[in-house]
Amino acid sequence: MGRPRGAMGRLLAGVAAAALCGGCAGLPLRPEQPVPAAAGPVAAAGTSAPAPPVAQVLSEPSAYVPPSAAQAARLQQLLAPWLPAPGLGLPAGTPPPLPEPAAGWLPAYRIVSYYGNPLSPAMGVLGWYPPAETMQKLTAQAAAYTAADPAHPAVPAIELVADVAQASPGSGGLYRLRMSSAMIAGELALARQNHALLILDLQVGRSTVEQEVPYFLPFLSQPDVMLALDPEFDMPPGEVPGQEIGTMSATDINWAISYVSSLVRRLGLPPKIVIVHQFLPSMVTDWQAIRGQPGVQFVMDTDGYGGQGIKLANYQHFIADQPIPPVRYGGIKLFYKYDVNLMTPAQIVALQPPPSLVIYQ
Image (tube, rainbow, N blue to C red; front, side, top):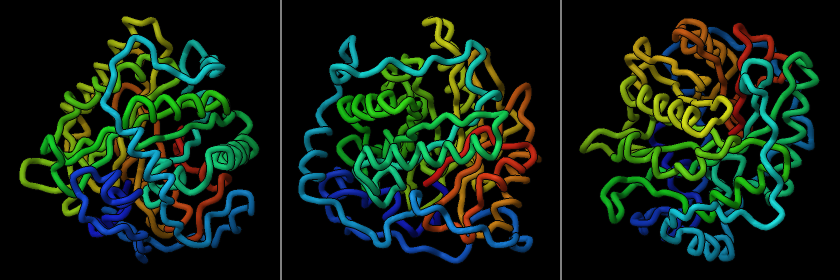
């Protein structure tokens, strides 16, 4: 997610501590505190001219709103055991997925996503509003990118943290909590009802990419479900999410790419997008070894928040200066609450290379 390691609330304290955190029942529920500078490898090189304020329709809540008792009760139901049934059990009347171009969404289109978990206001914008309002705001934000760059129409997406890093080991000792099939199916239905894609974001904790990705196979088998990996929460033995910044090897990233590529080939799916987040060099030290595979459109997303100077410097460092053969697309994450002078769609599409993915947290 690209926040300071001390800000535990952003990955852990989303709903009631005894609920979303599973084994971390003693963790206090608290909002995140903004910090003046982003974590990043490059010192800020000055700040660009202030961006105009975000339109009212896209404004954030004025204050943190704690989860209600109803949310906590709903979470208890959603954390039912995984049921690997043949069908997803989507609500009746759920529309089919968006028709995807045979060549895939990238680079002809731009993906504009909202990030987080609807049960956790602390994790991002997906937890700030009721579902209908969330999708109205996401649709408006995507439309702003289409207006700024009509040559690359924007496609909205929900980026759901489906594997949530934890402060305590939990029953399996892996410091991660998987969301249930019921919850994910609900988010997929919401996305389809609003002509959007679904991205499953995985924070593997002390588990592994090889263990976690196949768990979500019933959803990754769908043509409109994409995959994102967060090295920040890929923890070696002895380290705890939120206390240290994790790292993910090119070997693990390549395994995920190959897995998705095989899925596309076996099921005859259109190309799928695989995303990796990065805001420190240590998060992906051997990026040169990342390899593309047929049927996979790989995106490196520059994460982290702060002023426009550090955002631009990090984008240059992690996107323009790290070419990954044979094909790689750039992404950038923006923070409604924590970025200083939030960059506008016009500023974003003017970056070189222009990002194919824009994430709002």
